Length: 344
Image 1 (cartoon, one colour):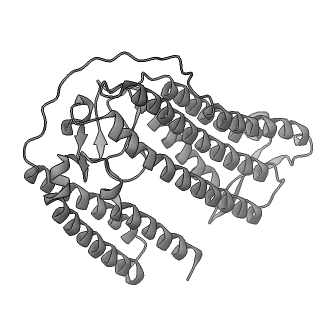
Image 2 (cartoon, helix red, strand yellow; image 1 turned 90 degrees about the vertical axis):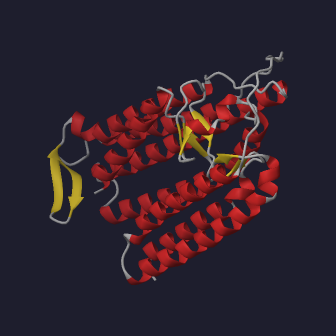
Image 3 (cartoon, one colour; image 1 turned 135 degrees about the horizontal axis):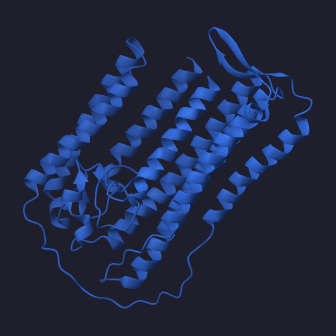
């Protein structure tokens, strides 16, 4: 069994457990991504959940067999089948749930003296600190670096570029651009308007402060990871480390990143379910099914939140009705593509 096999099997296990426990992690008024009454969830919903879990087990076993006997492509097939499976059972829930409570409007007065947490800033300080340290270190070794810098490693060999300040610092320039986008994203997330449920205004107000802090920290963790990866790539280009050491460092960083992010997302994801139960109640218009496309994609221009707790699975998803979500997608795609290009 190779390292790739172990990673794939661990990923299969994590996704299976996540989706198997999905009905238990959702708020009382949500079942498989659709709004329901608590009575429906306790009665008719149980039969739907059992059938959903049986189909999940069957799809997982089928995908594992395909991976073992066919190829790696079965992993992507597994993802698609799971999404279709959730969408299918969500449609069953919507057909059988009956009528829902009519939305109503209420008013509330709250005390907003509680200051918002700034813990999320620490992760961004670490990310920018890594970048600044790398730039300072680079200025110290610039004169001793070879005149030809390795910039690309592929099956046809290594590509070299003539040492110039631009070629020497190009990875860190990209790093600064990505961190800049992530920092702007973090600021926008933490400055969004609090969503308040008039039924329990103080508790919902403070819950949203905690929610924004958690999402900001996750963005900062991503920034630390990206900055660390780019620093490692720079050290390879500056010939401080060789190719085999680069592969070891990249693998180590990816392992640490996924460990930290999974643990944190699990923690904040479960908290997010409680947050959703407390803040977005049955009578809140923000929780209407029409804003959840397939129960997966959230599009609501009236919602001030950029990130919202997912209806299906742990963690959060973007509000694609918010303009800032485009900036976030650009930052993520840019970071992934440039990292893949530089590592190859």
